[in-house]
Image (cartoon, rainbow, N blue to C red):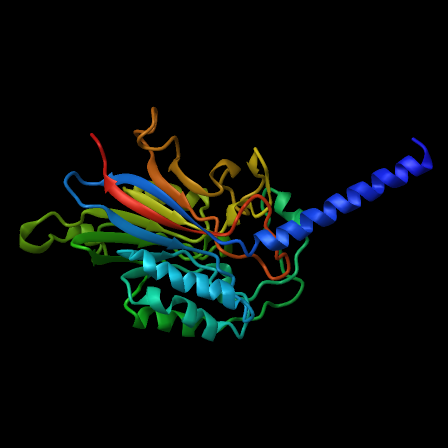
Length: 320
């Protein structure tokens, strides 16, 4: 290859990389709503609409994202599930409260992610290719006012499922929940089954069965947490954290999940630990939905082939 040819090839690669980065900046603000149907309710039940939001990583200048999140209330969900990492800046509380205000008027549950507790820091992106991408930060992270956020959610009536159980009456259904705090920070502790907080041990009104649906909720879908939910007989598990891989290969999908979940389950509706429960070989699995999330770290504000998302899950009766 001549010097001129090498220069042209190098220039082409640089231009292609620049175009990729430019598109990644655009795609990170190209929010989309996913809709999936989950056959998980008992026979004879009307559909139940569940809005799953995750990983907003909201910063004070993201008014457009906040406005988009507010509009999700127009979907009229019966239940909102927030799987954490809501903000990424010390001064984001006001905008976060504004973004979630219409959704806080709905029945809801939440768990915390690492960036609910502390602000993100610059990191070497190559570390995500390691088996365990966690690392010791170069300096103490900045604590966010997470207690204030928790008070906001609780005061609206949302259930705090960080290492807790709870129950809600949702559109005439009695739904029990089990949740864990963030496994990425090793804060997860599976609450004991059969105790006073386990709604499945209590009869429902007028002698009806205790619950109609049992849901597991966590931020980071580490295998140990998913296995614990499976052992707890969760009908459906909801998680976030992965950003859907954030940078995906078209036609292939995510390369990493930032936890020990396989990349094939980086986002969307799947079964755990095997195929979907309605697929051949899925009889021993539970339903798993992983949100690709709505944000990025402010230090890596790009997404590629992986649009930021929220999901409306329509739960319907399972066919037997």
